Length: 517
Image: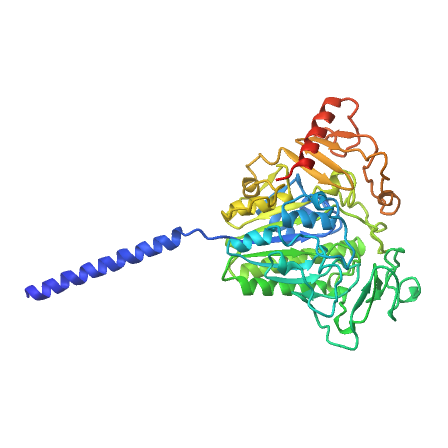
């Protein structure tokens, strides 16, 4: 009996020890911080007023509006530049584009991001993330002498991405093919190699100048190169017939690739940079979106973009990932209506205001050039609200590094500021003190004050913005100063009335320009 009692006592002790051990393990697992997935939706040429939640007329965007209603809607968030290559460069490097003379690139330009600097995907990868980019790239590929029929290096995989599926530059530039990781997709005919030139026409493919009868949309001279899918593009190409894209397939192809990446990476924290082609020209929405707005192809392309956003969000929800995924939705630069093709964007605009109350648009130094419709969503973590905090896409680098507690390498992301509290709460009012905007010149915000640096007398102000694109560029040979609280549309230049404020902001701008690390 005594022996049985002893065995019973030992058994109870073992059970208690086992329970305590399991509780301790469970507690440790529960306390272990879970790094959130990160999805950045990066739309192209979407203006401040182009979403329903920002006052759009003639087009509905229910999927994106859900992010606005259930997350944070920002009213003063900015791309770093009023053009696309520069904005992408800044977002992915944490550095202002002017430091590397990053401007709009040709379709065969070399990779503009230095492989030796730490990028945003590099930093996240070091933090344990699987990293992927799907969509428009326009940051260059290769070393300046690309053979599109061989491995294309360097590219996204050399600057921190584990996976890439790209429109190499833009939809209106050749080569009109997809590049997955290092190779052109479906480039299967060795007797039909891809060749590209941005110097002169060659080969047998038709072009917009000599074969206008083949065009589905009339184009300006710049966009009258090689015709692919009934649209003439910038530049010339020949060959690669099996690899040529059909523009109307973009929403299905790109969305499927993004969802496939998410499904393959879901066991690890992942970063997806989903870079839309929409609503960039040429605007050729899929048949299921045609006629879904009152604004023709541009409005229908916004509907298409909204659907793509919804499909990816639905995929995250089905995989039970929404409660552990931070979603950032924004645009690369301001809106443009006529950007090379006659697609009725101006004629069918109606009462819609792509820039909202702000002046200018793509290419412009005025606020509409960089003030972007921007949203942050994280189910259960971010409470709904509206934020007026001032911040820039260049700040995502330092903010996401803080989110995952990953150190930033010395001399990397020198322009990025940590504004994580702003991203996670609409109650946080403190954004940036100073915000720089690029647009063929530099501008500086401090609170509601906006200073636009004058063009040097020896430089020519780009006149194509107003003459060709019908957008107010905001570039002058004299300084400009605006009080955006009283004058959000930048109509009243106060530079002569407040010379001390001009001098103050000019001085701060020079400090930023001269910053080294």
